[in-house]
Image (cartoon, rainbow, N blue to C red; front, side, top):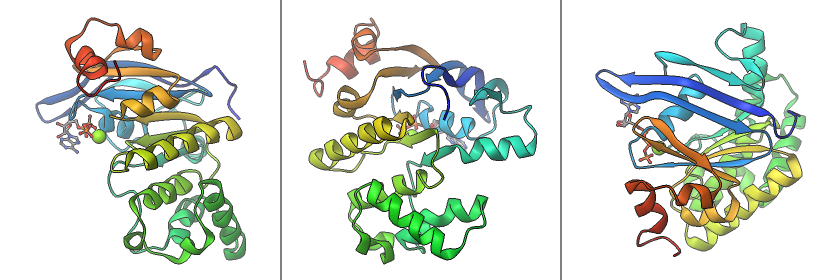
Length: 252
Ligand SMILES: Nc1ncnc2c1ncn2[C@@H]1O[C@H](COP(=O)(O)OP(=O)(O)OP(=O)(O)O)[C@@H](O)[C@H]1O
Ligand SMILES: [Mg+2]
């Protein structure tokens, strides 16, 4: 377990471009172990791109990423492999493989990194399903046979398959009704408390931010404009921040 309060993810001066589109432009961000950090910003500003860059799935042109106390780029392959196993991911799109059952989906990371017996993987998958509040009978279902909330829970179970220290959740409550979203927030918060997880959560959901986030970081013009408590961030004089936190859909 990574020491609580220390910087578990440190991003410095990250630049990511696609052709002439310069999406991330010198972004800095620290995530501390044990916190739930909400990552917000307008649609298309680069929230998912940052997540993908940190995970090595989008190429950065410049900048450094320190994960779990180590520089990711200069680490050797074995070290990177170990680091990868300590991360869990719930992607914004395509949360599950449609041709695999829930149980098989949860076992994907286990197969990728370990050679465990089928019996042990089945037991582990059952434990993870229990952890996220999925009934045992859902194990043999395919994603198309699940409700939206169940898909999110199954995707979370897969993200937790290898007992990660840090999980990346990209809009985990999008598409859920308010009660389903509130239940999911509660689940994330209780998992953080019981498992000592650190959570990086991209979200548009103001209710989630108020309910579970310790800090919020705002992505604006390719950089983190501000990061701090909800109160600190929402009082910043910026057009986007003001319309987001105090606009029509805000609480006050
Ligand atoms: N692989 C790619 N190739 C080209 N452009 C890309 C690629 N991935 C992302 N982009 C562009 O980068 C920009 C940021 O995309 P990103 O998906 O990070 O937005 P976002 O902040 O997550 O938005 P949303 O809140 O709608 O999910 C968009 O203009 C997108 O079209
Ligand atoms: Mg996105």
